Length: 355
Image (cartoon, rainbow, N blue to C red; front, side, top):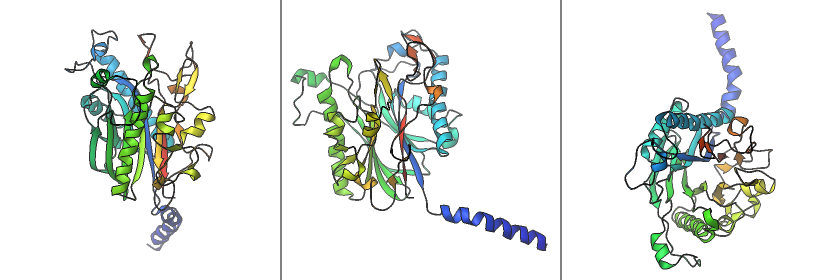
């Protein structure tokens, strides 16, 4: 009996330093991933999803859809293995509807994370939306809304009045909730495309919309911590992010109404989340407000080489290993042919902690 008590006391003494050191310390992974056309095989009325049907241009069968779901879930799982924790919240873009999100979060690779999601049907003509996956035991949703694109701005737009009336793009998602015991607002965006060389003014307006909404939230909740993320179709040095989103490269330069833009320095150092015509870009951007840079509680942390505050997740299995596109993201289609890859974008993430 005495020996049993001795072993119990010894065990307690050994683990006590570990448990006490970790008491009250919390870290959360917050990320974004463009899933590159996560469509199901069923036609949605009013959506231009014809190429992603079994008899469409991509011959999008149930087998290909299942492979795509498995691949996307495998990436999320791989990031969990690297970080030792699941993403608390993960913004996603290029998803067709609620159905594909239900199928994604139920994949065996990530079912243990118990992800829930916030999603609204937007007005994009092709039918792709943004959404937020979250773990309800870490992030408690208080409110959400889908913010439509509008032209109520002093920006000079290249579109005429008729073109403005006809213009459709993805809505911006805003989700406000509690991460741990702190209030956060998460914006998820997929700003207008660069196709045809257009859209600089439109993307600037997208950044402006997120910034204006952020300022309204900060006026109402002065201590709120804000993360804006998405496929911005711009680099963090472009006007949409640097000017209209007030993104600052250096964390020490961030004032109360600014945002810290951690991927600026990474872009300048040669990092990239996607490659186009041999040039690396970081369109998969995450920025945080001043409340996440200083003060008490959760703050953004350096996670790459102890100096970069963002991470571009680009392991070999996510990268094309041969052929003309070797070294770039291993995508689903190449030259119109299904090659069974993942996405033409690498996922990005940040870590916030009270350590």
